[in-house]
Image (cartoon, rainbow, N blue to C red; front, side, top):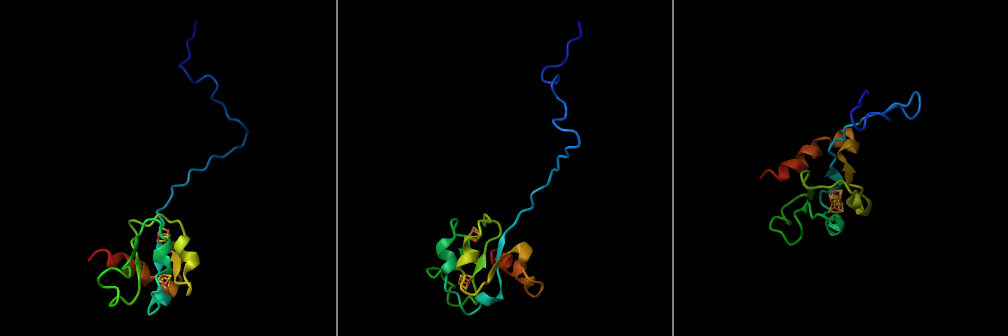
Length: 113
Ligand code: SF4
Ligand code: SF4
């Protein structure tokens, strides 16, 4: 008698022509761009669920900072900050306009100090 390995007998395509596509998820983060400069109203800080936007009003350096920055290692890509910004300064990194591409690095650099 031929014994088939357990779990292999019913492995057949569910539908002819079905293609299974595997897409590797890229890490996404949000970025604060130029329009925040001089505004810093901290609406984004108030809605961020993981407190990854700094400096906050309570932190040393808030007055001196020209804008706020998102920590790319902590951002969970929820998008909550984007919709509350009064000057549309926040986008996902994939949507940063060409003229503001340097702000991706600028946000990350703030957390390397
Ligand atoms: S996308 Fe979400 S987690 Fe990331 S900075 Fe904005 S509010 Fe915070
Ligand atoms: S809500 Fe917009 S303008 Fe206000 S601090 Fe955040 S990024 Fe800057």
